[in-house]
Length: 255
Length: 326
Ligand SMILES: Cc1cc2nc3c(=O)[nH]c(=O)nc-3n(C[C@H](O)[C@H](O)[C@H](O)COP(=O)(O)OP(=O)(O)OC[C@H]3O[C@@H](n4cnc5c(N)ncnc54)[C@H](O)[C@@H]3O)c2cc1C
Ligand SMILES: Nc1ncnc2c1ncn2[C@@H]1O[C@H](COP(=O)(O)O)[C@@H](O)[C@H]1O
Image (cartoon, rainbow over all chains, first blue to last red; front, top):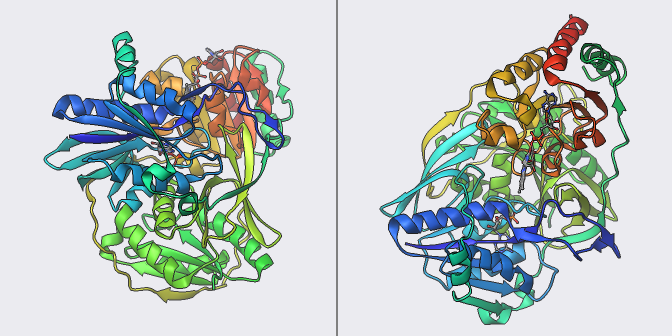
């Protein structure tokens, strides 16, 4: 079984965000593999262990995203492609167009990504890739079984969950709960250094920048206004609880 | 020529979701400024009776797409019929709620129409003739404003519970247009649907949420929060620590890897206030924290805080609110 995992490198959620020159200052921010993509890679590896085959990791990002790719290789993925778009002026449309083009040059039975990127993510890139490649998609999957050319996926829906069956190839996005991602072993880290990591640019995919130009234009970046310091309600627990109920009623007028 | 603001009228089990009204109210404002009209698209099986009510909330026109195959949401069928409608009507903008369904559908339709999409927005306005959206990024640590200058329609999903709903205009009706649609081939088969039956409001739409964290110490103690939720008509949420401990289901996790919520009142009990938790609830209007550690980070974001043992505070709070409401 040939599986493609879509992996994005994101800001660490602990990172302190500051602005410089009206933009996010990227200096000194630690970068991680998008947590949802860890679930995606883990699931791909489990399927490979069960059915045989190979896992290819595809990333769109700057050269520094190599680190996230290496992590996926160290977890057990077989090979990887990093497409550097050569500009920071990209949106989900750009990313999806590039990913789809890169993936279309591979053999695959299943494409698996994260449901959402935790930085500026918007839960749309994987779905867009499915649309471009004319594949069915099941989002927010918490359980996956693959068998005889079809996938059976349990996914979150409004107010519950649903079990969906889709023919392969298909696109699946991972939701928290799908699995527990493994940590790369020492051996895995050593082996990853020898695994294929193909770094390419748009022209290698036969794309030029105008074909993937962003549709979205960011007008401004700002930091959220700090919440005004709140009130600590004094007193013993019972006393404070009563005073809180009163404040919510009379002051905040919310209950 | 692109014209008009189109809203996805999301319904479930024959009931319009509240975010639809929020979208209509917001659309009315931007449509007035642009001199355009507001329409809605209602999709499902046996949903046409819901169309007229949308007029009271600001829809000038409602497109109704009914088909047996549209009873359950499937990405394929909904994308096919909605994308076709958008292609035929060429609206300036197409807005959806940032629900599970809205998010899924928006990505597919945006790509099929070769346009941009801004998701999980918390505001929309007209500036210099352009529709400009505001959205938080990096777990709410930064805010951007953005637009889609050329591609049409401009597409966005809006976070539920953030934008106000205008008073409905009683008796105002919408022009209802039945659209016969081709659902196309549906590649996914829905084998089973498991509904969480709960008498409580849904987390993302609730006006009040009471959440518990590791400080709840065990699943049995969530009863304290449920009692409080009962008197407040609230939904119950949780931190990731409580979910990962297996005390409560993943579906009620609030935060960066859980649900994003914006209730009028969010009460956090035994939750320390990690940035990943705040990411999911910091757009709440009033935040209350109950924590025995006076240094807990949650107090920095809380409008009201009680420093104390939640096992003593919560039962009294429930009783006191019951008295006030009596
Ligand atoms: C990539 C990533 C994504 C994440 N996503 C999420 C997410 O979506 N949602 C989320 O919540 N977290 C998320 N986390 C985890 C987050 O970092 C915290 O670990 C988590 O929020 C902690 O949960 P907590 O506040 O319940 O537990 P703790 O941090 O352990 O806090 C428990 C609190 O309870 C208080 N307490 C204990 N006993 C009592 C008592 N008797 N009375 C009153 N107070 C008491 C303590 O003082 C303490 O402040 C994520 C982490 C990562 C790395
Ligand atoms: N730059 C990227 N490179 C590879 N995969 C990506 C990239 N951006 C997004 N994805 C995939 O699409 C998913 C959803 O991302 P997003 O739509 O940005 O929230 C991610 O979890 C990844 O699996």
